[in-house]
Length: 394
Image 1 (tube, helix red, strand yellow):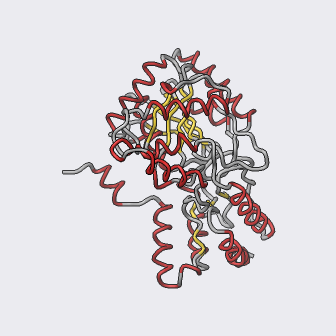
Image 2: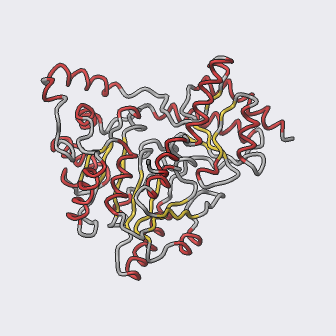
Image 3: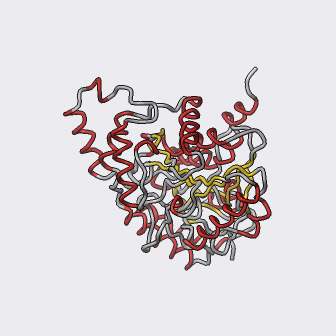
């Protein structure tokens, strides 16, 4: 009677959400102050002042009918023009508002891009560790997600394995930098090598292999790390962006897709994006927040707070014998578990009310994700629990 695939997806939350829900139930028993929940990537830093100031200004100065009414399906023309101007200034691009499609957040951006590109028999490739929902999004379009095993010493791309997997059925490659869950930023060297391989394979197969840049963490980078803007390195690149992290607006669901003119048959590509948005029902992203991001697109939340959290927790983990590649961005640590079975390790952590996410769903067994976008005082209180957890394995 119903789609078995959809019933299955709806009947079981993601591992991240299961742990998050467990934490809420456990907090009701022992008190929220006794739960160290590092499960979910929900920004803890407030949105910058310009967000609320802009909302108030819009409410006071724009008539309600216009403020809350429909925009063009692909987004308000003035908003798209403002965002294009910002992108050009920051990244040396030369796009216009007609290269942008405003979306209901990063998940919508990815879903629209995949629907715009997917044809029967297509395969998409991503690199472990990766955001687990990629698999759901790709398979929803009747395609297969191929995962390149992780290069765990630095979490840059494992090119030897990548070249074994890429083939004539590859439609696109999905990259996420800064990365969820590792926090790693792909170096310029990595990006140049990836672009070279994609160009060579596109020529070999006589068709473009597209690159989808998933960039919700672009502004959250530390230690002067440079996050390469991928359309500058590879012509056939779609950029998927969200303001959930940079402006701390995850619940408002607002972002965009960039379809540069350098993409093969760019007018058809943009039409496909518009068509996919229509087919999925993702037209006309929230009108109020379209106008908010137009005014606040070059602001960010206070990223220094996340860096302070990273440094405090990373130093404590290393001191207690954990192995972890130091992240350059996002707000996650991805250390190795202290036993091979990350699920068992996370269950042991639960005994200390320490909620961590096993790395298996991210395509990287034997690791755990720690989301440190939490109040700093919680990290201070949690460090003894990480110490006790380490002692259990000595």
